[in-house]
Length: 400
Ligand code: TRP
Ligand code: SF4
Image (tube, rainbow, N blue to C red):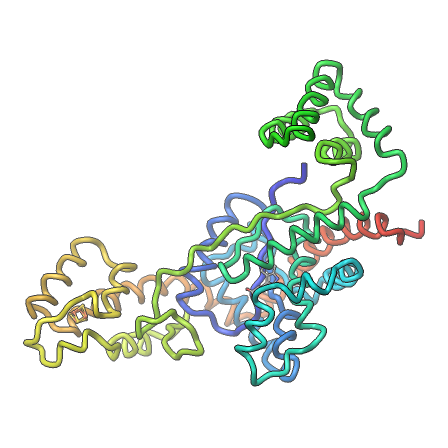
């Protein structure tokens, strides 16, 4: 009943690297052409772990937004904004917190993991425990249907779904709902009304999911319903509640196939990353000094691509002819490692060329970035305010 909508956020980490591009960003760029997308800088989420040193947040935010734009995230297609500039996220977070059992948050697998992993920090804070709930608010406030995330974030989308369900259950009650829903059924016209009732019974009594889907599709087609009746009929299908918040689906970002310079996962903290807009000389130098198969001590020693991180880069960047050239040349010592690396260097530089170009205008005139974000914040805020009106009303806070 609510249209498809994508929401995703990224913590402001400063300059992004090619791993981010081949993982999350390519995915965003694909989705922005398919349906309405909202992408935001999760600056409050950064504070949950970095509350003791907020000095980098602003600079990191602007740098990251420039990287989004450089990579091809298009502000004429997607809405780009900063979480803390849409304070309604905080209001929803607060209201959801009233009805969120502590145990749900304590049991999120990342919670204890992160506390252990980041043991040099004191993360036994209220804010850090609430991390997944804040994320739930980010998503639910836009009634997002899809959330592109990496594997590590899937439990957070799962808890978001549970929170939406609980909210609808607790607050979707409406006086005389049953009667109003039945009135709405009549408005479907006798043929459709009969079908609706049949499908509803099939779903509720026999749990037939396809009956539910069929009924939803029918409601999507029914032109003569008001928004409120439509909402009731959707809710009535699954129970006797209004659906105020939408349960989103996780859309898994396939983890980047792009390894770092040492063959491990690319990460700034491992020191094995190439930044999205790294300068050409530095890219060339980094790839030239990458480790290769340790068996190739001398130029005349044959090697094995399977033992070489350069080969993994060829997997991403090279066509089959080049890859064949690598395998043959490496195993026979027919090519040297520097020779082998050159096509990778060329391909990375070529991939980065349009990114550097797109970024230049924003570096020359930072007010462009400010304007894109201001516009995105306005748009996001309007959507957030619509949901908050319904949420406040459902929770008895509309004071009209
Ligand atoms: N927690 C996410 C991460 O660390 C970032 C994030 C915050 C997010 N809010 C979100 C992602 C809402 C998707 C939807 O990657
Ligand atoms: Fe690696 Fe290429 Fe050298 Fe073989 S020739 S070890 S694949 S860099």
